[in-house]
Image (cartoon, rainbow, N blue to C red; front, side, top):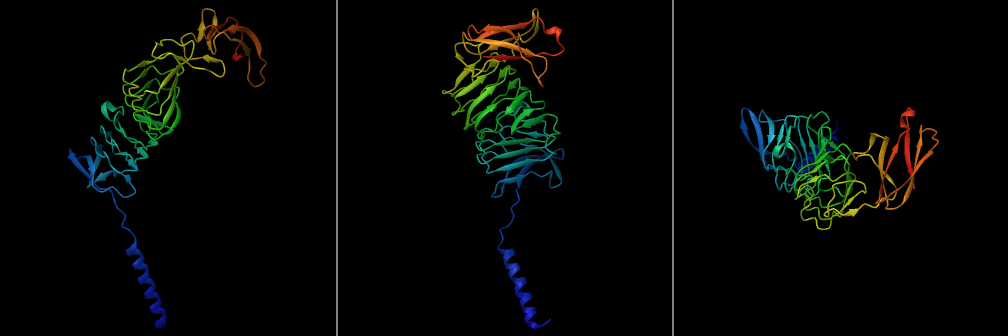
Length: 330
């Protein structure tokens, strides 16, 4: 190889070295922590990367990280965080006022999130948060559409503060937890299913853009502070549902008649299979039935006048058919 070629190689290597030296150092998050019985509780951070992306390690200095302490990341510049399977507990106020946090992934071993293990206060003020993901193998918590639930999704624990528009709560939910929608600054409308029986304190507090809450069933037990400072909210209920007081006095206008499948009279009764029809006051509707939906032949059964917006229908002939489907025709 001639000297000119050697010089070219040498210059090339020097340029590569200069390029490497010019690259910014990759920052690693560093944490403060305490130890107890060879277990670590993370108490804070000392070096969050500029991009705010943090993967909490399984171990720190050889110790397994089992807990994230109270207010550990409060006011942090986190944008996303992944909590490993080694962590079992997330303390109160852990991510309070993390206004840049957009996503969090929770590992399979977390058994407690916030006070009493139900999630309240942990994400207060996370106005950019749009996604909470839980490992499918976690036995205590689950997520659906970025929303945090208990396992089985009977309790809605945390709606991400940055999700906007409208939201329909899944039919599986029976309770809405404390602070569940607290300070959701983009939420405009919520539809609450017939299965919900309780709404916890501060559940919708400070949801300033929220203008409509639509209840599909009977009035649930609602904490007196559930909607505090939500002055623009209008509550809507369906004619035929019960338990509503003067506080909730706006009937819900329905574009089409509806069978109330969540109220007590739905199902088999003394006079056959029956249900309540809800729609507009003093309008008549036709109830029709068919025995299959692949090639249905709809047979008129009765005409019902919706006095006060509702009418009860019962079918004494339902036992004569292996299967029977019903529809309401305006």
